[in-house]
Every structure is written in structure tokens, then in C-alpha cells.
Length: 316
Image (cartoon, rainbow, N blue to C red; front, side, top):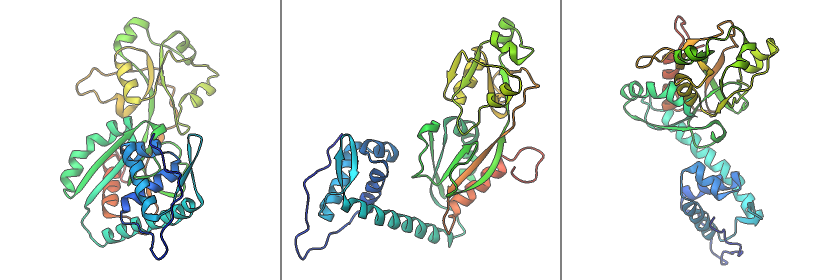
């Protein structure tokens, strides 16, 4: 990791500290928020050397040191804490001003960054992007797909997420819901048979995932049936689980919209159909600002209509 200079700088008498690069302020704000150049570089998608260089240049322009080190952790100096407070207000004001200007236009345009987990991105968003881009030719999309633990609270316009919403500082819109059912491949069923009860799953290979946002179906169905489930294979991505189940690795929970994507694949077998955990809502969340930019509005509206469950007049 590149080192942040510790030598205290001062601005010569009669000269005003200056900031000439807005990007340096944004980089500084992210380093200050995460207390780490490495973490900030990962979030910003920049090399660590570039992040460190931007911070150093900002310190030079201001004529003071913004960070000191406490072991491996960066700590804001008194000057750094003061600047961070003003920088956050300034950047929020810039974003609101940009949204306000964009809102004066009825034409959606600009770069829209949409963040989602890998499997939600692949299963729900990727099939929609071609139609969206054709309908809104002035909007450029950035799909930022990550595992759940790496979803950022910054640097996105819209985030697609499933399960309980914890952050009330954002606006949310429910797009659809995820119905989970247990599936197995016909090859697996031929080899191992079909369980007749949840208790019999103990004699079967179970494929499971790390569930986030209180979305685990086992919490509901296993408790109701007083059963203990020990998976043979645990994967942290739903797309990977779908591939594993299709290849006969075992029985696993899959969203019906993912399990039924069978245009080029043999259909999966729905096992233990009486196990029907409560559907999990899927939301679009976006920043709470005075003006919602047209690009955000049209994307969320488009997703709500495109993902609307069959037979409904409004998004669920």
C-alpha cells in the first residue's frame, strides 16, 4: 500500500489553499469513509497508486495532512475530519444539483450505474438490457454485479436487492417477488430417488447457499417440520447452484423464474412440492434526493413493468 505523507504541511502566509480537481475530493471522501486506500480503490475501481496519488495531490493543494496512520488503518487528522464533513455536504450538493438539472429534461440520458448480486443481475437484468437500451438510446448502462458482501452503499444510481431492506435512507420500489422451490435434475432422481418428506432429505445430497437478508427458506420450512438440514455442497451464488443442481449434484432451492429457464436445457424436477416458503420481495432502491433523475425513473419503471408477475396490473 502506498504511504500517506505524515509531514505536516502549511500554506504560506497570504496564499489560499486550493482544490482544483473534483475527482480528488470524491476519492478522498471514499478513503475517509472506508479508512483504507485499498478498500477505496476496490470500490472506485481504481489502482491503489492512483487513489494514493489523488489524496497526496489534494493534501498538497490544501497545504495540510488529511490522514495519519494507526497501525494499518488510516485515521483522519483534525484537518481531515473537518474537510471530510464539508466534502460530504459538497458532493451531496453536486449530486442533487445534477439531478435537478437532469429533471428539467423529459429525455432520459447519461450513464446509469445499476448494482446487483451476480445471480440477480444475470437472471433478471441481463435479459432486459437490450430492450431497455433500444427504448432509451441516450442512457448508457453500467451493470456492477458483485457478491452480496461486496455491495457498496456508494457509487451507484440503482441497486437491485432481495429480502429485508435495512437502510431507510433510500427510496425503494418493489419490483417483483422470488418464489423458492426445491428442485433436482432427472439424472439425480434416477440415481437417488425422490424424497417423500423433509426428514428424508437427510439421506440425500443437498445443495445450499449462504443466505442474506433473512432470506433462508430453511428457517421457515425446517422449523415447521422440526428437521435439521446439513448440506453436502454450499455455494455463494444462485447461478452456480442452478448449474450444480442441473448437473446432478443434489437437491437445492431455486427461484422458479431461474429453474424454469429451460429453452436449451432439460426441465428440473420439483421435489417436495408441499414445502412452500414465503415469497421473497425484490426491490429497486435509489438515493433519497429532492429530484429523481429521468434515467433512474425510466429504468425503475421499466423494470417494474418488465418483471411484473403474470396476471397483475401493477408491480407487486
